[in-house]
Image (cartoon, rainbow, N blue to C red):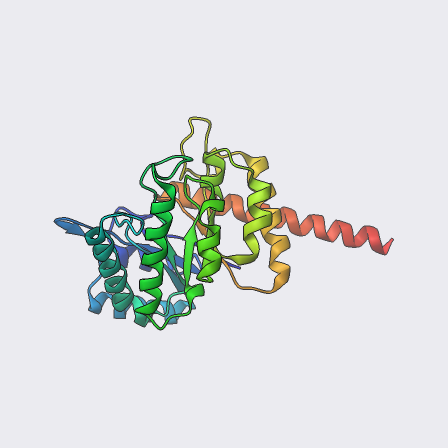
Length: 273
């Protein structure tokens, strides 16, 4: 399992964040955006530098597609713009040989009901994913549909149809008060990337793990470790966005790992005696 975080830990550009993080993590989530009049898309020269840093540090990248695209829109022009954005990012980042692409099957509405017309939204999502896969030679498992505010069961048939992988954002599951154990049980086998961050009682997410529910965090990590017996390589991204939250989260994760190892050693010792 590769441990990673986002490209927005320092208040600086992507390249300087990657230089800082490369010795500390196994994977970096490149959080990209392209809004009107502003974007953070790296130049091809910067991409070459990112590739060199990755080779030097045995680093991988996950690429988060921009958030302000709407593959489920009923507006054909909006869906075309979404596809154009996907293809632009794919072309720009292909030389990085990413571990995966984080795909938002974006809802029309935030919350447990993703749209006022769910069947139409799902149909448009299906069309957008179909067109994306037709335009690229990448394996469909490279595209990791993320758990968002709505129940993932709504898009599960579409994910299965196109053989997409999953990004299990357990923080979003906690945020929406869904059943975390059921989510892990149903999704971890097809999960390629996990997002982990603290969620408090507000509720507010993308916090340090130290500000989250320690019991929920331990349960999730135990489920994830148990799932690793299937031998699949996965990325666990600490999805936080400042240096303090990153360092405290990484420290807690290391403590949790050490605790799990001690538990396993204790079990082995008990078996031996």
